[in-house]
Amino acid sequence: MRVNKILSNYELCLVDLEVLLNGETRSAPTLCVTDGQEVIPLNTPDGRPIQMNKANAIKFSDG
Image (cartoon, rainbow, N blue to C red):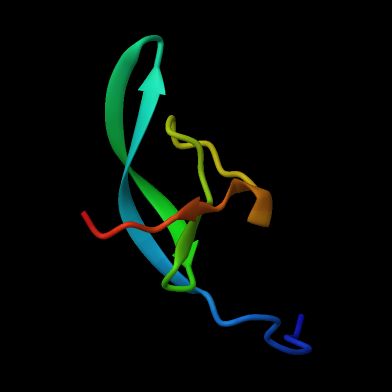
């Protein structure tokens, strides 16, 4: 296996992602990638992995 080329400059990050589940607000550590302006989750709130998809991007707000 080999890397042909790097397609974009995203960084791995661990975020405290808040979600609404069954009418309750919950937060969980979530593995994501970021470009500094938005984050894309790489797993679901219950820990199942998902394929990176730009459609799942969440705008990053500091606070």
